[in-house]
Image (cartoon, rainbow over all chains, first blue to last red; front, side):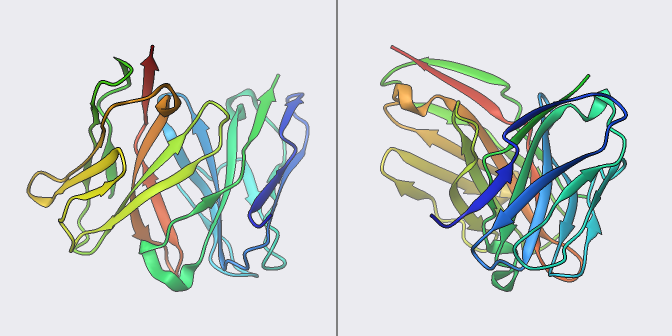
Length: 115
Length: 117
């Protein structure tokens, strides 16, 4: 089934630990995104990538890093997790060739708890 | 800067009632796109509709309808004859361009809709 796959589905992580959230898409979309969802704040953009080999910062990039070695994969790394990074993380992709009217497709989310 | 406001945090209705979810946006762009997404209890985000700033025609899809009014910067979503399966969090989002391409979505804080029997 075409779409976006995130792993893990959920994780409890000790503060100070390093963690990589994985995201893979099979739609050959150029653009990929990481959002975090927090109650009362909606979804906020962490990092994005317009195409393989390029990345950019979103609204809330601090404490996170990303890489885009190929079209399909867009991992998000927390170098040293802190409790404020407890959130639900969504990976998304869109066909950037379609312009800003193109909808984004979302993964099922990763629920991360930092203790 | 772009901003989306969904003032209704939570709405509860009885099944078969009509319900309208409000969305007000701010943008300096002359061309922009608006979206609605649904997040059911299972957690995934489901795309419902997009509308560009040049098209103010209302749209109806089954029990769903959308009212876009540029004069008031609003893009409201109405569910007619609501059903329990409509219970979800609904997000309004404003699309804008990222540097070099790609579409950044600015989301509202969401409206939790509860439809009860």
